[in-house]
Length: 349
Ligand code: BGC
Image 1 (tube, rainbow, N blue to C red):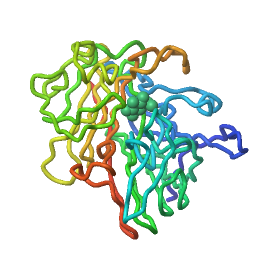
Image 2 (image 1 turned 30 degrees about the vertical axis):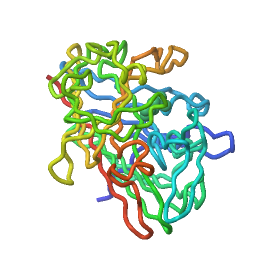
Image 3 (image 1 turned 180 degrees about the vertical axis):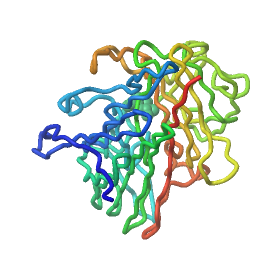
C-alpha cells in the first residue's frame, strides 16, 4: 500500500521568485501542523484542549508575505547558530571567522540571512512526516564549510510534535540548530498565568548584550528556579539584574541530564484550557524566552502579538559556545554527523 503523502499547496513566492509550499501534517487524533518550506516555519499547530476542542497554539500568520517582512523568527528553523555569538566572531582550527553583527555587536540566529530566511527542499515521507533539506554553502553568513542540513518534522498519534535535526560538513565548523516556535497554550491572550517547570539546577547568566558571562549560576533562591511549577508572571518583573538584562526571561538553562538520550527539559501547563506541553530533548540547554520584545505591532491569524503573548522553548547548545571553551562544544568536525532530537508532547489535565 502506498503511504499517503502530506497534502501541500503552493503558498506564494519569495522576493527572489522562489516558490514556497505549505504542507499539512495530520494524525489520528485530529491534530494538525502546517509547515512552510520558507524557513521550515511551523505556521500553525492545532491540538485539543481538555474538552477536546482544537486550538492553534503557535504564533504566526496566514500569509507568506507577513513572514517575508520578517517577523521575529516566528516558527522558524534557526541556523547555523541558534542564539548569539559574542562580538560576531570566533576562531577555529587557527582561522578567524567574522559574522554579521545583526544584534548590536553580536551575531544572532545565524546572521542576516540565516536558515529561517531560506527556502528548504521538502520531501513528504508520509501524512505525518515531512523532511526538509538545505545546503548551506561554504562561507555562507561567514561560517566555514558546506553544510548539508536536514530537519524532519513528525506529528505522532500521541500528539507529539517531533523535530529531528541532522547535518554533515566538509570542513570543521560550528553548528547549533533549533526551532523558534512561539507557543501560547491558550491560543490567545498573555502567557503570564501559564505554569512552567524547567528541569535545571543551573542557568548561564548574561551581560547586557545577552552574551553569557561563562558562569554557571545556581537557580536556587533566584527567579530562575522553575524546578517546581511556577507561573511565568509570578517573578518576571522582579528587580533582578538578569531579568532586567533580558527584559524578562531570555536565558539559557543548563538542563539536568543523566545520559545522552531524550530527556524531559521542561513542561508548561495552561490552567484555563488544560493544555500541557512537555519538552524532551537530547540537547544540553534550553533558551526560555517570554516574548519580551513583542510589542503589539504584529498581528496574524486573528490575534495581536502583544508583549509576553507567547513563549519559546528553544532546545540547543548554550549561546556563544564557540567562544566559551568551558561550555559543551558546538564544533562539528569534517565528515562527522550532527544529530539532535526534540519532542514537544501535548496532553491535557
Ligand atoms: C533570543 C531573544 C530574541 C528572540 C527573537 C530569542 O532566541 O534569545 O533575545 O529577541 O529570539 O529574536
